[in-house]
Picture 1: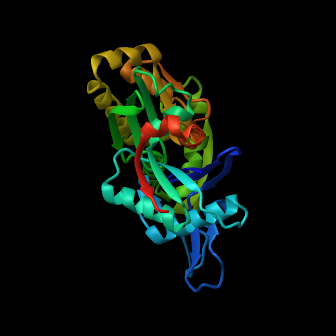
Picture 2 (picture 1 turned 120 degrees about the vertical axis):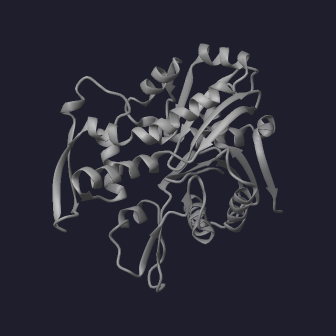
Picture 3 (picture 1 turned 90 degrees about the horizontal axis):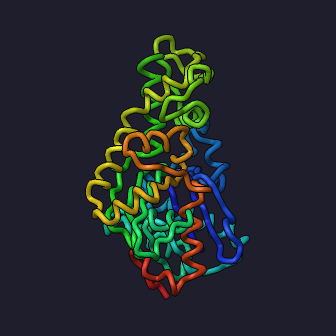
Length: 334
C-alpha cells in the first residue's frame, strides 16, 4: 500500500488497483463510547456541528502526527476499509515532509506498525510527488517541484533519486484558510468556521489578479461579533486575494531561497524545464502565474496535483527494487 497521510486528506494506493481511497484526515470520537468513531468524509461533515460528548479532530498538523492514538485509529480504519475488513499486514510506503524530525518519523512508523503494517518505508513527499507527476527523478537532471499541501509546503530540487536542495515551511492550505478567517473577523466583524473559509478559498480565492475578478462575488454567512447574531455579507475575489498575501509571500520566499541555494548546473536545467506545482494548494487560481512572475521561471501545474504524492508511492511500490534508493527511512517489523 502507498499512503499519502496528509494534514487535510489521506489517499491510499493499492498495488495493482490504483487509488482506492481518498478521504479527509478527520476523525470523530464519542467520549462516552456510545457510538463508533466516524472517519473521513463522515467526520468532516460533523465539524463544528457536534454535541459536547463528540470530539472531531484532525490527528495530523503541519504534515506530522499531532495525536498519536487518533492517528493510529484513523489509519487502522482506512486500512480495514480498503481491504473490506480482511485481516492483512501490508507493506506500506508513506510520504513524509522533508523537514520532519527523527521523533516525528518514529511516531509515524510506530502508528503505521500499530495499525497493522508488516513493513514501513518512508519517502519524502517532494520525491513522491515528482514521481507521481511523471518527472524523471532517476536521471542526472535538475527538476524543481513545489508541493503545497494542507499543513506544509515542500520546495525541492531533485536529481538522481534524491533531493539536492529542499526547504519545508509549515505554511500551506490551512494557513490560507486561517488568513481568510482573520480577514473576515477584522474587516466585517464576522466569525466564520474553517470549512466556510476553505469554501471561500476554493470558490473565489486567487493568488494573482485576473481580468474579471471584481465580478467574482460570494455570499458568506457567519456570526456577527457586535450583535452576536447570524449575518450575511457579500465579498469579492480581490478581497480574498488581499487576505492571503502574507502566507503566499512566505511560500514565494521559500521558493526563492531554494533557488538561491541550487547548484548552477541544476539551476540551468530548472530554467529549461520549469517548475512543477503539486498538492491541493496548486489548485489555487493564479498561483502558477504568481510564481512565474516572482521567479521568472515557467511554472506548470501537475496533471493531477491532489494525487501526485500517492501516485508516486504507488509507482515506487510497483518498481520496488529499482526505486529503493528513494526511501528516506524504513522500519522492519517482521
